[in-house]
Figure 1 (spheres, rainbow, N blue to C red):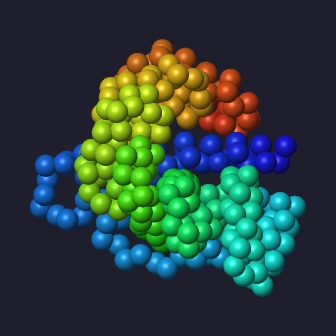
Figure 2: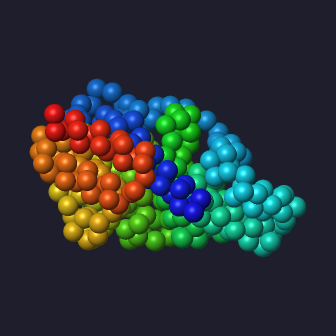
Figure 3: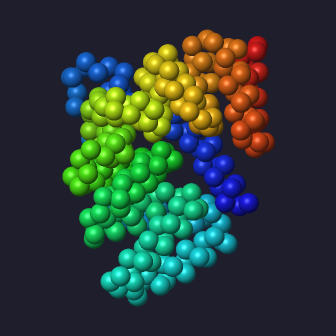
Length: 280
Protein backbone atom coordinates (compact mmCIF):
# COMPACT_ATOMS: atom_id res chain seq x y z
CA UNK A 1 0.00 0.00 0.00
CA UNK A 2 2.78 2.43 0.91
CA UNK A 3 4.59 1.80 -2.38
CA UNK A 4 1.33 2.50 -4.21
CA UNK A 5 1.07 5.84 -2.39
CA UNK A 6 4.62 6.68 -3.49
CA UNK A 7 3.71 5.87 -7.10
CA UNK A 8 0.65 8.14 -6.89
CA UNK A 9 2.77 10.94 -5.45
CA UNK A 10 5.34 10.54 -8.21
CA UNK A 11 2.66 10.72 -10.90
CA UNK A 12 1.21 13.91 -9.44
CA UNK A 13 4.66 15.49 -9.15
CA UNK A 14 5.44 14.70 -12.78
CA UNK A 15 2.22 16.14 -14.11
CA UNK A 16 1.98 19.20 -11.92
CA UNK A 17 5.64 20.14 -11.94
CA UNK A 18 7.54 19.11 -15.03
CA UNK A 19 5.19 20.43 -17.68
CA UNK A 20 5.82 24.12 -17.05
CA UNK A 21 8.81 24.43 -14.73
CA UNK A 22 11.29 24.71 -17.61
CA UNK A 23 10.09 26.32 -20.83
CA UNK A 24 12.16 24.98 -23.71
CA UNK A 25 13.28 28.27 -25.18
CA UNK A 26 14.92 26.84 -28.29
CA UNK A 27 11.62 25.30 -29.37
CA UNK A 28 9.74 28.58 -29.29
CA UNK A 29 12.11 30.51 -31.57
CA UNK A 30 14.20 27.91 -33.43
CA UNK A 31 15.36 30.44 -36.01
CA UNK A 32 16.87 32.75 -33.43
CA UNK A 33 20.62 32.04 -33.52
CA UNK A 34 21.86 35.17 -31.78
CA UNK A 35 22.66 33.25 -28.62
CA UNK A 36 24.18 29.87 -27.89
CA UNK A 37 21.87 29.52 -24.88
CA UNK A 38 19.48 27.10 -26.55
CA UNK A 39 18.05 25.97 -23.22
CA UNK A 40 18.08 27.11 -19.64
CA UNK A 41 20.64 24.47 -18.74
CA UNK A 42 23.08 24.60 -21.64
CA UNK A 43 25.63 27.01 -20.22
CA UNK A 44 25.36 26.13 -16.56
CA UNK A 45 28.37 24.57 -14.96
CA UNK A 46 27.56 21.06 -13.80
CA UNK A 47 27.71 20.43 -10.08
CA UNK A 48 29.26 17.11 -9.09
CA UNK A 49 26.34 15.02 -7.92
CA UNK A 50 26.89 11.69 -6.17
CA UNK A 51 24.64 8.78 -5.29
CA UNK A 52 24.87 9.74 -1.61
CA UNK A 53 23.55 13.23 -2.36
CA UNK A 54 20.40 11.90 -4.00
CA UNK A 55 19.94 8.86 -1.74
CA UNK A 56 19.35 10.80 1.49
CA UNK A 57 16.32 12.80 0.30
CA UNK A 58 15.03 9.68 -1.48
CA UNK A 59 15.14 7.77 1.81
CA UNK A 60 13.18 10.55 3.48
CA UNK A 61 10.59 10.30 0.72
CA UNK A 62 10.05 6.55 1.04
CA UNK A 63 10.04 6.43 4.83
CA UNK A 64 12.08 4.56 7.45
CA UNK A 65 10.57 1.15 6.78
CA UNK A 66 11.59 0.94 3.11
CA UNK A 67 14.82 2.83 3.74
CA UNK A 68 15.97 0.15 6.20
CA UNK A 69 16.48 -2.37 3.40
CA UNK A 70 18.41 0.22 1.39
CA UNK A 71 20.65 0.96 4.38
CA UNK A 72 21.37 -2.73 4.82
CA UNK A 73 22.39 -3.16 1.17
CA UNK A 74 24.53 -0.02 1.30
CA UNK A 75 26.31 -1.36 4.37
CA UNK A 76 27.11 -4.63 2.60
CA UNK A 77 28.34 -2.76 -0.49
CA UNK A 78 30.96 -0.84 1.51
CA UNK A 79 33.02 -3.99 2.08
CA UNK A 80 32.09 -5.96 -1.06
CA UNK A 81 34.39 -6.39 -4.07
CA UNK A 82 34.23 -7.79 -7.58
CA UNK A 83 31.11 -9.73 -8.56
CA UNK A 84 29.69 -9.41 -5.04
CA UNK A 85 29.79 -5.63 -5.33
CA UNK A 86 28.13 -5.72 -8.76
CA UNK A 87 25.37 -7.97 -7.45
CA UNK A 88 24.69 -5.55 -4.60
CA UNK A 89 24.63 -2.60 -7.00
CA UNK A 90 22.05 -4.46 -9.10
CA UNK A 91 20.00 -5.11 -5.97
CA UNK A 92 20.20 -1.47 -4.91
CA UNK A 93 19.20 -0.26 -8.37
CA UNK A 94 16.20 -2.61 -8.41
CA UNK A 95 15.18 -1.66 -4.88
CA UNK A 96 15.24 2.04 -5.74
CA UNK A 97 13.23 1.24 -8.89
CA UNK A 98 10.65 -0.59 -6.79
CA UNK A 99 10.44 2.46 -4.51
CA UNK A 100 9.93 4.82 -7.50
CA UNK A 101 13.14 6.77 -6.84
CA UNK A 102 14.97 7.04 -10.20
CA UNK A 103 17.86 9.31 -9.13
CA UNK A 104 19.76 6.87 -6.88
CA UNK A 105 18.87 3.96 -9.17
CA UNK A 106 20.43 5.87 -12.07
CA UNK A 107 23.81 6.15 -10.36
CA UNK A 108 23.96 2.42 -9.61
CA UNK A 109 23.09 1.54 -13.21
CA UNK A 110 25.66 4.09 -14.39
CA UNK A 111 28.39 2.50 -12.29
CA UNK A 112 27.49 -0.96 -13.62
CA UNK A 113 27.53 0.38 -17.18
CA UNK A 114 30.92 2.04 -16.78
CA UNK A 115 32.35 -1.24 -15.50
CA UNK A 116 30.75 -3.68 -17.91
CA UNK A 117 29.88 -1.44 -20.88
CA UNK A 118 26.62 -3.31 -21.55
CA UNK A 119 23.97 -1.58 -23.65
CA UNK A 120 21.12 -2.46 -21.30
CA UNK A 121 22.92 -0.98 -18.30
CA UNK A 122 23.52 2.24 -20.24
CA UNK A 123 19.85 2.35 -21.27
CA UNK A 124 18.74 1.71 -17.70
CA UNK A 125 20.99 4.50 -16.43
CA UNK A 126 19.88 6.97 -19.11
CA UNK A 127 16.18 6.33 -18.58
CA UNK A 128 16.51 6.83 -14.82
CA UNK A 129 18.51 10.03 -15.24
CA UNK A 130 15.84 11.39 -17.60
CA UNK A 131 13.15 10.42 -15.08
CA UNK A 132 15.13 12.01 -12.25
CA UNK A 133 15.40 15.23 -14.25
CA UNK A 134 11.65 15.13 -14.83
CA UNK A 135 10.93 14.84 -11.12
CA UNK A 136 13.20 17.58 -9.77
CA UNK A 137 13.08 21.35 -9.93
CA UNK A 138 16.50 21.64 -8.28
CA UNK A 139 18.58 23.66 -10.72
CA UNK A 140 21.81 22.28 -9.25
CA UNK A 141 20.79 18.68 -9.92
CA UNK A 142 19.22 19.17 -13.34
CA UNK A 143 22.43 19.76 -15.36
CA UNK A 144 24.07 16.69 -13.82
CA UNK A 145 21.06 14.49 -14.53
CA UNK A 146 20.72 15.63 -18.12
CA UNK A 147 24.43 15.34 -18.96
CA UNK A 148 24.61 11.88 -17.40
CA UNK A 149 21.55 10.85 -19.41
CA UNK A 150 23.16 12.04 -22.64
CA UNK A 151 26.39 10.17 -21.82
CA UNK A 152 24.46 6.97 -21.09
CA UNK A 153 22.38 7.01 -24.27
CA UNK A 154 25.37 8.00 -26.42
CA UNK A 155 27.25 4.97 -25.11
CA UNK A 156 24.24 2.71 -25.57
CA UNK A 157 23.93 3.82 -29.20
CA UNK A 158 27.60 3.05 -29.81
CA UNK A 159 26.78 -0.55 -28.90
CA UNK A 160 23.31 -0.64 -30.51
CA UNK A 161 23.20 2.10 -33.19
CA UNK A 162 19.60 1.36 -34.24
CA UNK A 163 18.13 1.26 -30.73
CA UNK A 164 14.93 3.30 -30.75
CA UNK A 165 15.01 3.37 -26.96
CA UNK A 166 18.49 4.89 -27.12
CA UNK A 167 17.49 7.49 -29.72
CA UNK A 168 14.37 8.41 -27.79
CA UNK A 169 16.27 8.85 -24.55
CA UNK A 170 19.02 10.88 -26.19
CA UNK A 171 16.43 13.06 -27.91
CA UNK A 172 14.76 13.79 -24.56
CA UNK A 173 18.11 14.59 -22.94
CA UNK A 174 19.02 16.92 -25.81
CA UNK A 175 15.78 18.88 -25.52
CA UNK A 176 16.16 19.06 -21.74
CA UNK A 177 19.54 20.73 -22.07
CA UNK A 178 22.29 18.37 -23.22
CA UNK A 179 22.34 19.90 -26.72
CA UNK A 180 20.15 22.06 -28.95
CA UNK A 181 16.44 21.25 -28.54
CA UNK A 182 15.82 21.01 -32.28
CA UNK A 183 18.49 18.32 -32.46
CA UNK A 184 16.56 16.39 -29.86
CA UNK A 185 13.24 16.88 -31.62
CA UNK A 186 14.80 15.56 -34.84
CA UNK A 187 15.82 12.37 -33.03
CA UNK A 188 12.34 11.89 -31.61
CA UNK A 189 10.70 12.52 -34.98
CA UNK A 190 13.01 9.92 -36.51
CA UNK A 191 11.84 7.44 -33.88
CA UNK A 192 8.12 7.98 -34.58
CA UNK A 193 8.79 7.79 -38.32
CA UNK A 194 10.12 4.27 -37.78
CA UNK A 195 7.68 3.41 -34.98
CA UNK A 196 4.56 5.66 -35.24
CA UNK A 197 3.07 4.34 -31.99
CA UNK A 198 6.24 4.66 -29.90
CA UNK A 199 4.91 5.59 -26.47
CA UNK A 200 7.77 7.53 -24.94
CA UNK A 201 8.66 9.44 -28.12
CA UNK A 202 5.05 10.51 -28.72
CA UNK A 203 4.53 11.45 -25.06
CA UNK A 204 7.60 13.68 -25.02
CA UNK A 205 6.89 15.21 -28.44
CA UNK A 206 3.44 16.09 -27.10
CA UNK A 207 4.87 17.61 -23.93
CA UNK A 208 7.48 19.59 -25.84
CA UNK A 209 4.74 20.81 -28.22
CA UNK A 210 2.83 22.09 -25.19
CA UNK A 211 5.90 23.87 -23.86
CA UNK A 212 6.26 25.69 -27.17
CA UNK A 213 2.56 26.57 -27.38
CA UNK A 214 1.77 24.14 -30.21
CA UNK A 215 -1.31 22.69 -28.54
CA UNK A 216 -2.97 21.29 -31.66
CA UNK A 217 0.12 19.19 -32.36
CA UNK A 218 0.15 18.12 -28.72
CA UNK A 219 -3.47 16.93 -28.95
CA UNK A 220 -2.54 14.73 -31.91
CA UNK A 221 0.32 13.12 -29.99
CA UNK A 222 -1.76 12.39 -26.91
CA UNK A 223 -4.62 10.96 -28.98
CA UNK A 224 -2.13 8.61 -30.63
CA UNK A 225 -1.18 7.35 -27.18
CA UNK A 226 -4.69 7.06 -25.80
CA UNK A 227 -5.79 5.10 -28.87
CA UNK A 228 -3.37 2.42 -27.67
CA UNK A 229 -4.31 2.41 -23.99
CA UNK A 230 -5.76 4.76 -21.40
CA UNK A 231 -3.21 6.17 -18.98
CA UNK A 232 -3.27 9.10 -16.60
CA UNK A 233 -0.36 11.21 -17.82
CA UNK A 234 -1.39 11.64 -21.50
CA UNK A 235 -5.02 12.10 -20.41
CA UNK A 236 -4.03 14.95 -18.11
CA UNK A 237 -1.89 16.59 -20.78
CA UNK A 238 -4.70 16.19 -23.32
CA UNK A 239 -7.04 18.00 -20.92
CA UNK A 240 -4.47 20.78 -20.48
CA UNK A 241 -4.07 21.11 -24.26
CA UNK A 242 -7.82 21.29 -24.80
CA UNK A 243 -8.05 23.97 -22.10
CA UNK A 244 -5.38 26.06 -23.81
CA UNK A 245 -7.23 25.71 -27.13
CA UNK A 246 -10.47 26.91 -25.55
CA UNK A 247 -12.16 23.53 -26.06
CA UNK A 248 -13.90 23.56 -22.69
CA UNK A 249 -16.21 20.55 -23.04
CA UNK A 250 -13.38 18.32 -24.28
CA UNK A 251 -11.11 19.56 -21.49
CA UNK A 252 -13.72 18.88 -18.79
CA UNK A 253 -14.34 15.37 -20.13
CA UNK A 254 -10.62 14.60 -20.08
CA UNK A 255 -10.20 16.01 -16.56
CA UNK A 256 -13.10 13.84 -15.36
CA UNK A 257 -11.32 10.77 -16.77
CA UNK A 258 -8.21 11.79 -14.83
CA UNK A 259 -10.20 11.74 -11.59
CA UNK A 260 -11.54 8.28 -12.38
CA UNK A 261 -8.02 6.96 -12.98
CA UNK A 262 -6.51 8.43 -9.80
CA UNK A 263 -8.89 8.33 -6.82
CA UNK A 264 -6.61 10.52 -4.72
CA UNK A 265 -8.41 13.28 -2.74
CA UNK A 266 -5.69 15.92 -3.15
CA UNK A 267 -5.44 15.27 -6.88
CA UNK A 268 -9.25 15.21 -7.23
CA UNK A 269 -9.53 18.58 -5.46
CA UNK A 270 -7.02 20.09 -7.86
CA UNK A 271 -8.87 18.67 -10.87
CA UNK A 272 -12.21 19.94 -9.55
CA UNK A 273 -10.66 23.39 -9.39
CA UNK A 274 -9.68 23.18 -13.06
CA UNK A 275 -13.16 21.99 -14.03
CA UNK A 276 -14.94 24.75 -12.07
CA UNK A 277 -12.65 27.31 -13.66
CA UNK A 278 -13.72 26.07 -17.12
CA UNK A 279 -17.42 26.07 -16.20
CA UNK A 280 -17.43 29.67 -14.94
